[in-house]
Amino acid sequence: MGNMALQKDRNGTILFLLLPAGEPGSRSGLGVVSSSADVSKFVAEHCARSDTGYVCLVCGTGFASRVSISVHARDMHVNAGVVYLCPACKKYCNTKNAIKIHISRNHPHMKGVDVNRFARKKQ
Image 1 (spheres, one colour):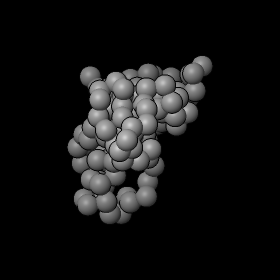
Image 2 (cartoon, rainbow, N blue to C red):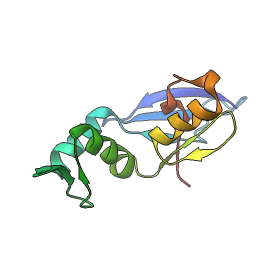
Image 3 (cartoon, rainbow, N blue to C red):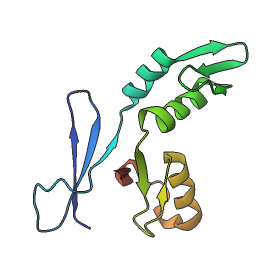
Image 4 (cartoon, rainbow, N blue to C red):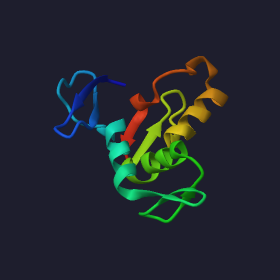
């Protein structure tokens, strides 16, 4: 695997660029993970309080807490189109939580690593 570079675009979205060895500046393997500010903005604009907690106005799914609706917004709406590739076994996971669980169960030596490093755009 090549080197990795971090870059932010004008909206504050963090871009993870994989630079293959021997090809400085290559943009292959581009993955995108939105910032927490993007998730907070989405929740403020597209989620509402309900009698039982919170509801996503985009898909109608209900949640008991603000944390759970924030995780939903990040994984299902803001970061839609992002997958996480395990560097140890090349397994793809659709959510940040899924890759964390996979790593803790299958690669305990990697527990605690920043999983945002493994984000890739769905192809």
